[in-house]
Length: 80
Image (cartoon, rainbow, N blue to C red):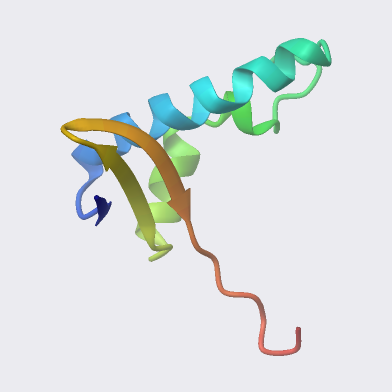
């Protein structure tokens, strides 16, 4: 089941999924918060809240009652 994120309380779940999904890649390449703070594995709650407040559609994918996936959408400029 896919649900749209509707409130900031759900962002904690999103943040956990995002970080855990990308931390293995960061580890493989030796990326840390110090040498690559903009890598997705190190996204901050502030940045996620900013995207939410900007109206970016965010979704959680559930397998049964367990959230197992996350995705968001961003509109490209009209020129692209």
